[in-house]
Image (tube, rainbow, N blue to C red; front, side, top):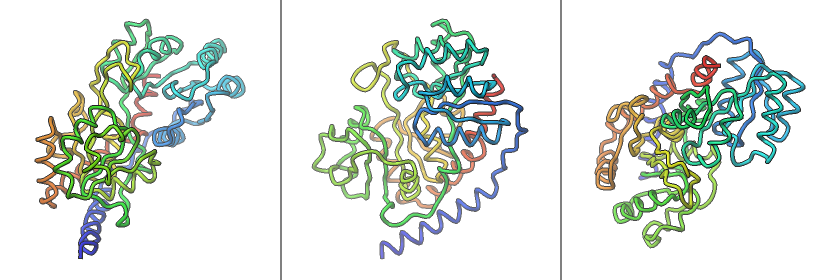
Length: 349
């Protein structure tokens, strides 16, 4: 009986999502006569969305890996080299390559999308680029104070061809879902929430969840390891409620934020969850209301007690849950695609 009811409810949700998407206006922008060489960071959920956006926004988009961007730039002589993040997977000679590309007369830009968690590194990286973009609203003044001249805030967006409504099987259907690393603020929240969650269908997926104290209650819910973006989409679609909690910014075990920049901007997960037509419960960042309306197309919480009350409410009020989820779907696909973000970024260029 439960599987039948879940299937029936899933049909209603998906049908409503399809109707909403038919109302979304297709983004139509003129193709700019620009040749852009894009250097990905290696995280496909973002990179694929940016590449697709560039392919429809500029006359020529070339993709180069970080180890060979100097060679590719010299070969194609693009109008712009756009580097995503410049962290983690980038080689030791990354900045030397950028300096040589600039010496060729080619403009360079970097888009920091992990701010402010790696300011120990980005404070010096920013000085090697002609243009610096950051998704973090509070990092703009920081990079300018370091000596970068052309610094702009361009928020993240979502790859709407990947993060979109889809039908899911029973194996992806949960009452409550969280996907992400077990940073300490998240560990504290779920440990406190554990007695409330124990009798619900819950998925907690990602790394570092061995830190939880309440393994007795939460252990059966944990799926350890990396969840590929395509499977993440299935879990977001299958869940009635997806929790989003931003990582802490303090310098320490999980961060290299030695300049102690506090965060004000929402993470990419905010857009990705909403793009799937699922109810999101998120903690609050300063610029959240620039993109969504709490209580209308997203729900928020300030503490565990509030989160628990809202989970309980929306699990027993299906119409209200779907209404918020459908409005979030419309807002996201209408306003927050990577195509719109890339268009804004290129306006600054």
